[in-house]
Image 1: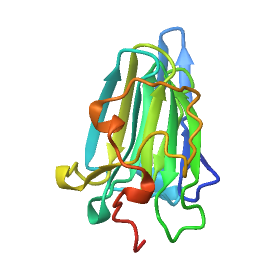
Image 2 (image 1 turned 135 degrees about the vertical axis):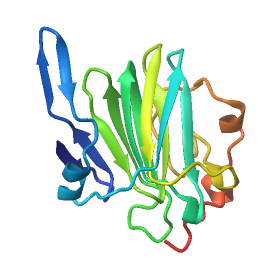
Image 3 (image 1 turned 60 degrees about the vertical axis):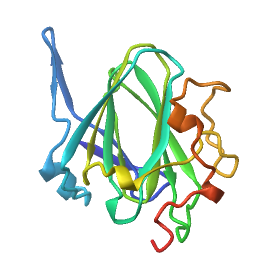
Image 4 (image 1 turned 180 degrees about the vertical axis):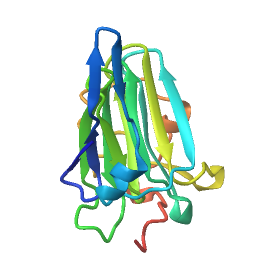
Length: 184
């Protein structure tokens, strides 16, 4: 696996080695040994699977607060998404900065997002299947979100009116949110 650190320290684009022939392909999507060798040793405890039927569906920007925070390893196995990580740690030199990466079933890239970051993605095609690992179980009491179009963050999603859940359409702006990362 090839690990490329983005401009946000700790956020990596991961490109697996893919072995293909006339039957299809084989690849390792996660390897503890490869992650440890890259200095990205996570103990993932939960796998999640998301399906989005329509292009223009935006999910996020999500996070879990405080000690319930989650590191995530995300990938798109069908269709194409713009995947975004946002640094939500006020003491960080990259606070409020974001990185966007195109993930698809074709390019097989993954994005590793550490704790203290928000995460979201926009579907760029219909019929998207999205998988991710988390290193902390889902905790409803710690669930948090930031408005997808927060001007203090300024993510360029490339759409003006995405398809949103009711929850995401009502998420607060960062200036009004409690992230639990204030001491990080």
